[in-house]
Image 1 (tube, helix red, strand yellow):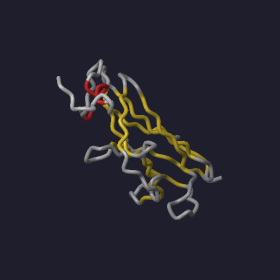
Image 2: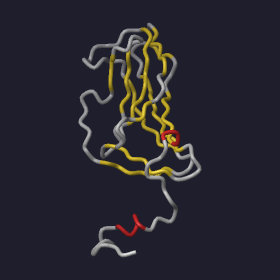
Image 3: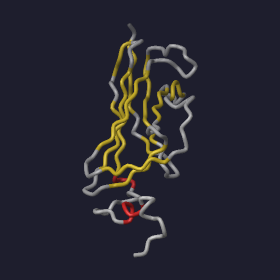
Image 4: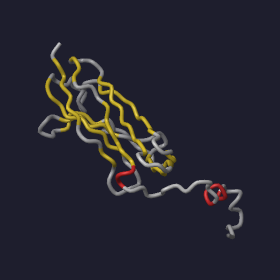
Length: 155
């Protein structure tokens, strides 16, 4: 195999001579995105939220993420679908593609908390909410978690 002039200086050798094959376009069922959220919290309490991306195969998979730090969104909505809060509502995500190889069974955790404020800054009312996570990638559609139900209890 002939490499272009200067390829070694650019680090192309590492990309060409991988010790183990890596799936560059994993099938949709090879990466699982889940959301960990409490079932209920008291009004005013921070709501810890964790997105977990897991390689559920027995081989390494190349995952593509957006942003210098991995960009991920968490959406809190009313049961009718009206969005109350989005983590990335006012965020600017740099147009940087981050590539990470996930080994078999490896999980990446992305954490944040909802402070029970709406996108306008008003306090969220006690009641029922639906929460889901979104992980943008270089694919046409982002990965999404199944929705979770959250109850905000009165004081």
